Image 1 (cartoon, one colour):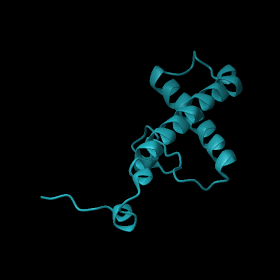
Image 2: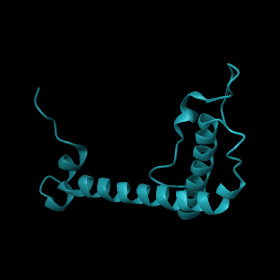
Image 3: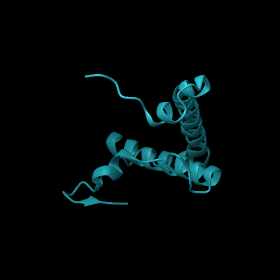
Length: 109
C-alpha cells in the first residue's frame, strides 16, 4: 500500500514550515496537559486534602475520591483558561462507561 498525501500536503505542497507543524503541536499539547495535571494536583492538595477522612475509607475508595477531586480541579483550570472551548478537553476514564456505584449500578456524571 502506498502512502497518500495529507490535505495539507495537497494544499501547500512546497511548505517546509508546515511539515513539522503536527510534531510541534503534539509537544505543545503534552506540555499543556501536564501543566494542568500538576496544577490540578497542587490545587487538590490545597483545597481538599485536609477534608479527606483517611481512617474511614478503604484504599480503593480513597483513590476514587482523590481522583474525582483531582479531575474536578483539572476541569476547572481547563474551563477558566479556555473559556470552555479548546482543541482538547479533559475526560475522565470513568465517564466513558459510567462511574461504578459499587452496587451493580453505574452513574453517568
